[in-house]
Length: 360
Image 1 (cartoon, rainbow, N blue to C red):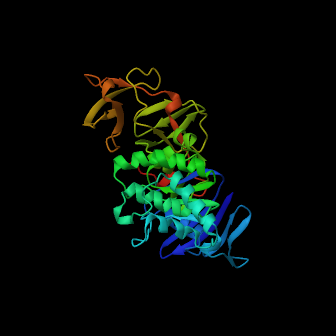
Image 2 (tube, rainbow, N blue to C red):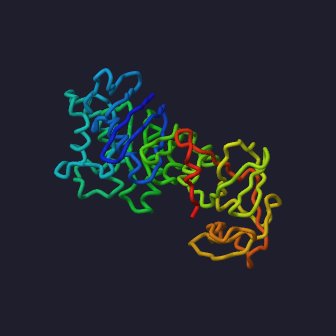
Image 3 (cartoon, one colour):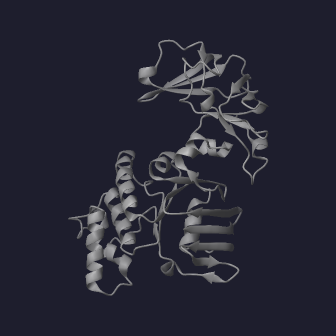
């Protein structure tokens, strides 16, 4: 179990991170500059928080009040950097064995090396140097160097950012298997919601130095609860809303009232509808619409439309559909199931979030 409750000021940026993570993969999802990497660096001991506490499996790594600040070497935390940080003059074998600098028994070192080579499919590359490796191979070598040290926590900082999209997809499948075999607690930092969805059992959202408690991945995407959560999980259609009954909201900018499957709380401030959720055959929340624009993608169409009574200064609404569902003519009406209307609320720590929200 990892427990983090820290604060750090760096110029005008303020990090306030408080969360817990257990075994399995916990994602930290957020935009560049939100504080994700800084959080990992504080956990690893590379950066020192101004105040707070970090504990791992009951052992205190940092405590500002008790003046505890273990060195990175004593924390038993494995940290995979974005650039992998391999030593260019060393072979794959020597790079991996660097992770066992503290182990003097040659037989133990050799056994750990062989296990890592096998696990990460590096057979035949032992005498290669980093310049001779592909991006995926270099990543696996860096991960092997960490795993031979048997860390109690593994942290991955944007592990696929340096790879092209084709290789990234292949390596995500491999990485998922490796992390399952590792079995311990993992923190994975990413700005990609697809990576987070593919690899993480739970996800914490990070924005401007503030982090939300981790939520189960599928539950978060199904019901992100907040405006920032909806945006970070890829929702294209978000608009301010007010409660009209226990199962209905009014969306003034769209000029519609939407039925909801969920009970509407009094402090609802917006709704989100994912672009795939609209349908010409939907029988609920069905309203007159007209198309304003369209854009073709390799496998989908993006249709931009407006409701008949939508306010002029409000953004167009997005409808995504696969090419095999593309209609010859834009339908006069579109609807959405009440179960696909996401109700959004202010975050507890930012009660004015909805007041500041501007969909334009």
